[in-house]
Image 1 (cartoon, rainbow, N blue to C red):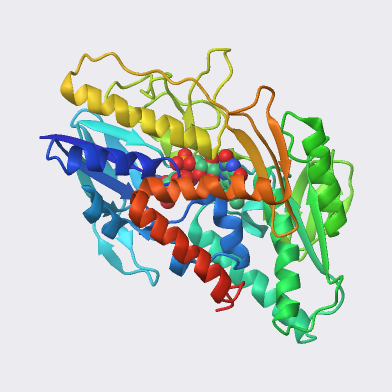
Image 2: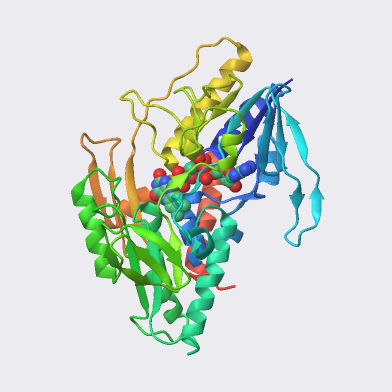
Length: 429
Ligand SMILES: Cc1cc2nc3c(=O)[nH]c(=O)nc-3n(C[C@H](O)[C@H](O)[C@H](O)COP(=O)(O)OP(=O)(O)OC[C@H]3O[C@@H](n4cnc5c(N)ncnc54)[C@H](O)[C@@H]3O)c2cc1C
């Protein structure tokens, strides 16, 4: 039986593995394996909510082992560290427990077709001090470590053991940085509601952006302005045209020799692919992304496919696909179709991807949601407030429905809705 291995159960990988698990694994047409470094999946665009506690991993995480047994695939926990292309095997690093015990030796897993979707990691652009002093939001573990740090810092202020303002710098005003900044302000409000003795204007948050605008990837200047205005209205200091040159324990230094004091620095200044991808002998670009055709097939190996933040896939106009949730999902699902075709006929004509921009939304916690829907209206439909929030939330709803099917998915979404009403609005343990 053909063996298909998918490495990376993220925004795109989970939808792909569910599709081929059901179509091929359950039907006994292929053995399907998912490999992921974590043991559970949380949709990455929600990691900022996990980091502030407005999302509870206990109710939102999907355990790969259980999902796999329901959807026709095998789950293997581990980090991809090598590919033996001659013998068509991937190599997983030894797995250690949090206290350093060896749990599993290095393993090898056979494949006939391999799909790599291990996502992106924060790009520090080689700037000194980022690795040592800044927090990033690449993995759920990092979001949980950050949550603890933020909670402790608020606790110190509430107990009078830290004086003055709580100075935070968020670097990068793309979706991750903007949403994280707004979430932190919401968190301070919620903590006051739950009895923390915090000054109204305790949080002194600076959002730093190298380009001349927040949300620089948004094509519409009106939307960028609407996001900027709301951020300022919330009380966030927005510093555009500001290039960070160094991060220290005390804060940020900028190219113009300005020093921005910060007790906490969150780095969200862009993504690159994990360095391990450049060690497999496959063609990669400068950001370590695997070079692939618009069929999702890597340029170096016809047995290996890739998608999402770790892939460099051209569009018809010569540019490359943006690192976004919707691209990861759409390409991953297309690779699923191509794999189904290849199992029927190894010389089958493969589907080619054409980017469909469905729009962009940015959620500023409970303060506002702003965005643009491209799919239905020529030139797009700009939305804000409740309609925008509904569309924004629909993206996650669609992900849940894809993972669990219409009935179970709807039940899960209902439970999430009830939880939001009944449970505390912040996870504080
Ligand atoms: C806070 C935040 C907000 C965002 N908001 C938006 C938004 O509003 N709109 C939008 O389009 N995009 C948004 N994004 C970006 C979006 O999340 C990504 O583009 C998308 O998740 C990419 O999907 P992916 O499947 O390529 O990778 P991911 O979803 O990152 O999944 C990668 C998976 O690979 C696993 N993995 C990593 N390394 C290894 C390894 N060596 N071996 C095995 N497994 C590994 C990880 O555990 C993970 O499960 C946001 C991102 C963040 C962090």
